[in-house]
Amino acid sequence: MLQYIIWDVNPEIFSVGPLSIRWYGLLFASGFLIGMQIMTHIFKKEKKPVEDTDTLLIYMVISTVLGARLGHFIFYEPESFLQNPLQVILPPFAGLASHGATIGILFALWLYSRRESSRKTGQTFLWVTDRIVIVVALAGAFIRLGNLMNSEIIGRPTDLPWGFMFMNADYRGLTEPFKVPRHPAQLYESLACLVLFFLLLWIWNKLRERTPRGMLLGIFLIWVFGLRFLFEYVKENQVAFENNLFLNMGQILSIPAVLMGVYFLIRSRQHRPISA
Image (cartoon, rainbow, N blue to C red; front, side):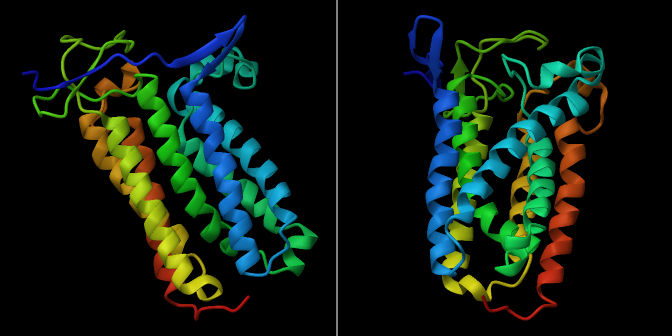
């Protein structure tokens, strides 16, 4: 009896000529589509203009993709970015960094909250971010599941019975052994994001317009990047230069994110719950 799971999934669902439909793309898009429905529900319950969700979706899509792409090159491949900056917006769009996406989303939501219509309807920066992190947590679960379907961001070797033997992974840059049971790190992060989604949704559903400003954002940052710091210990480094670091890039970038989360969580306790 095998003491591990053989993972030999084809990342491509089907193709028609040059067009290829992949699990990652489907799951990535599903995060936005389902998230849109959840945000519409939140806007209705808190009596905000539902039509604003269309604008919010545009801000989220652009900021997520650009932020993740820029973050990948700035944090992991700066030399490549300096040689050809246009590759950020050109296919095949390989390489996305969650820390970059986080920065991009926060900046975009700040811009969104500065709109005249947002100010008139009470959609402040913290009001929007406290709601958007609910759907971002769900999207994170989908994206990490997409990483699993791509056999990327693989874990380090393990002898645990739930270890995955990644048959289609790119093992370039890794030291031996190669095809051995490994931690399904993508699945760990996906499940962690899914638990966070239900936790944040439960808190919001209980408090709604009385949610202390910044509380959900603080919980999100502490949970996601605190666990990210720990998960990095069972993941293979993404780029070679990380092998010479005491902490890898994912851990280094997670520290300020967690500290920011602590700040927002403490700050939220200093404010009374607000009404819509």
